[in-house]
Length: 389
Ligand SMILES: [Zn+2]
Image (cartoon, rainbow, N blue to C red; front, side, top):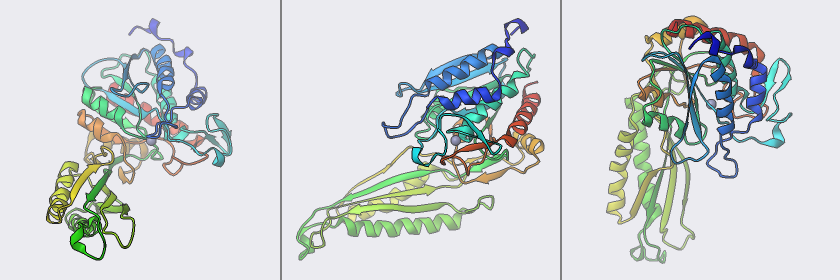
């Protein structure tokens, strides 16, 4: 890239960029009534990154028309640093917002708007940090990655992992962590178990096969498994140090004097790093299938969504050390999940660290503190210097 092709001045400042990003709805949701395309956000990012010398690739997420990932690369080479964020936001509750969620509004030394902290603000700041390196001879590439559908299916990150893109050495995901490095989180699984038997008059149990009684037995098995896992696995880095299993909802039967023919349970599991999701499902299956067989119930056991694996990067990893030094904070664990497992799958040493607090994410009157802006730019520039120059 020659200096002449770079046009730094055409790229707006942080506030103008974020104003624009916030004004473009990019909600992702399993509910079609809320779900938006993220194309406008991806296009505007490309419009700002190209004048800085980034080579931009926009990839449609397979099977999801209107949903795009963006990979923007400055420089070239096999290593390099990825700054990654998701372009989508969660839905919003109009009644509970003080100002318009799509209008960046400054008050009390904060910028309010849907996505300010989770996490369009990160893009504006990452581009601002990259501006200084436009036209610079980078030894390793700087890659800005923008994904689709993190808040709903995580299919953007999944598609990237399947496509084997991008290739680099390090990745920072700018989710709101108040600029504290995060090197681990638990996984999330949501599962559905359904038993189906045969209804009949309650006066004679031989007339039917009771799905509710089968579920009662299955519930005991699940709670026993939970105790077992909680004895076997513990990680003191987490506020809740053990893996959890929550019985979330149950529906079954219709009348006291009928044998219950159907019963369905939904539960969630939060595995610790080191617990493999497929093995957990197999363990559950090995306990509940015999219950169904013995009671001659038909059984369905399936994930309600594909799940997010747990994530951990070792404490002594180069990226962890670099972020700890730049921020003055020791890397810790958080209770929310991110796209980190898929970037890890791509072979990237990954860490989560970004401006804004997770307490403001997914809330009415979401905001980012103005005090977070300068430190973010400084830290990101420090990372680019260390890993790309
Ligand atoms: Zn987020």
